[in-house]
Image (cartoon, rainbow, N blue to C red; front, side, top):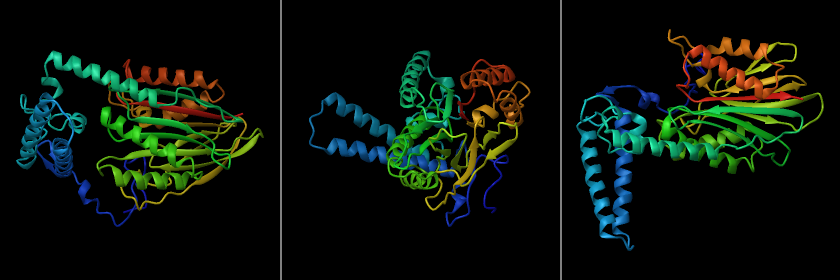
Length: 367
C-alpha cells in the first residue's frame, strides 16, 4: 500500500500500519456490512448494560419510568435478535434499507423514513431542527481577529444537522492561533454529535499544544480510543503568526482533508495537501507539518467536500478546477463577498436551492 492514497482518487486517505484494515471490507449481508452489524451489536449491548445498571441502582424512580425502561430493554433484545439473523437494518414495512444515521441514534428502529407516519415525520423534523440549532450554537458565532490577517467563514448545513466543523483556536503560549476545518464521514445527527465531541477535545488540547502536527496526533489518539472505527474525520489545521509585517509564515497539518488552495498575490496557485491520514482510524498514525511563506495579498481557501462535490442534473461535480478558477478570478475581492459569490456560483451550477452535503469555506488573506 502506498504511503497515501491520492486524495483525488479517494476521500479515505490512510497510512500503512499494523492495523488490520480487513475490518473495513464491505462484505454485504442484506443491507448491512459485517462490520456494521458488529458495530450495532456492540452499541445495543452497551445500551442494554446501561439500562440494567439504572434499574439496579438505588434511585427513586416512578413505576412509569421503570416500565418504559423495561419496554426499551425488550426492544433491544428484539433488535439483537435481528442482528443475529442478519435482518437488522431492514424496514419492517417496505423491506428496504433503514437509514444508517438514524440507526446510530435509535438502533431499535424498524421502519425507514419513507414508511413512518406523517405525525412521526413531523416530530422527527422538530427534533432535527432543534439539533441543528444546538450544532450551530457550538460553532464560533463570530470569527475572531488575528493580527495581520483577514478571515471570513461561510458554513451551511445539509439535512438539518451538519457534520462540518470549523474553529479559530485562541493563541497559545508562543502566540500562534490555530485555524481548523473538519468534515465527518456521514451526515445528520451522528456526524454532528461526533463533531461536538471533537470540538471539546480540540479546545482542551490546544491550550497546551501549539504545534499543528502534535495537536492532531493527540486528537487522533483520543478519537481512536473513544469512538467506533467506522467513523472517520478529515481535518486541516493552520497555525497563524500574529504579525503586521508584509511577510509571515503559516504552518499546517492536513489529516486527509481537501487540499487548501493558496493563491499568491501574483495569481500563482499552490496546494496545502495531506500530510497524514484521516483521524479516527488508528492511533499509531503520524502527522507531519509543513511551513510556507504568507505574503501581503496572498489568499488561502479552506473548504469541505460539499463544495467541490456539489453536482448538477448531469451528475457533474463542481470540482476543484472551478473552485481554483473562482479563487484566482476573485482573489482580491472582500472576503465576505468572495464567500457569498462562491455560494451563489455553486448553487447556480447545481441548479438546486439547497445543498446535498454540508458547505463550509474559510477564506484567509494576509494584510
